[in-house]
Length: 272
Ligand code: KMH
Ligand code: ZN
Image 1 (cartoon, rainbow, N blue to C red):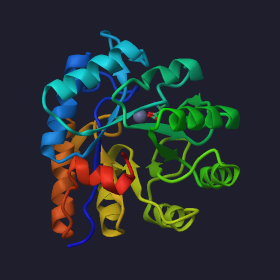
Image 2: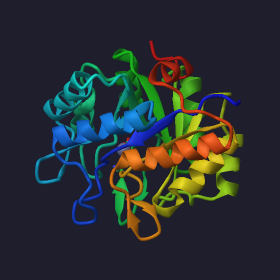
Image 3: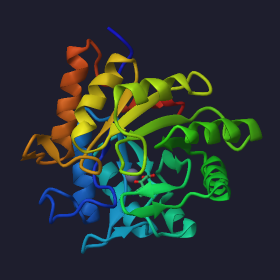
Image 4: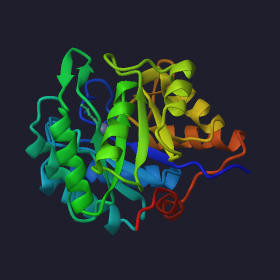
């Protein structure tokens, strides 16, 4: 039996809409329910965004507070990871609104890139600012890496002391504007990590489950969920992120690995 697999569920994101899938949660109640269901299906970590009731992306602290409270009130002990990426076009101040009491991890996006037809701005001083805030709040950073040069930024942050273990690396592959979700790219990226560290893959769209399977075989961890992919199979919408978590857990079982519990994930990720 290999090391346990940390399955993270990205249950809402900022981009997908109910016009694309009726299963995308919007309200804090719906997002919390999706997170709790994902935890029941085997996710150890939930990657959270928030929405306004009409579906527009929100980084409002009040929305994140309500989501976190509802997850805990439902008795779920999933690791709570809040997005500081938010949506393209948001200011850094706005994006930092998500880091509410109860968060255990926060994302740290490592560079500016084309994001579909938009530009996702993460200037180096912004990255340093977010890293500093995460450290001040005692949150474990999850470094979002979309392209190879971002590993050089990771190395630079470590050298300058802006970042230190424990941190986690998430390779987000398949965003139009970032690196494609291919085996060659993933192996190249893992090989380029500045130090031995836990890493995970989020494959976008139809690459979600193939990338998860590859990561599991390579000893890595996985992220699935409606933020990244709306489909359980070609042409078949997933009924929720929990369905995608179940599929990822099945891939892990077939590879002889079992899903980490939230507390096992906390130990692996260095969350106190
Ligand atoms: N919504 C994307 C522009 C993160 O959560 O930190 C950024 C994103 C990354 O989703
Ligand atoms: Zn996100």
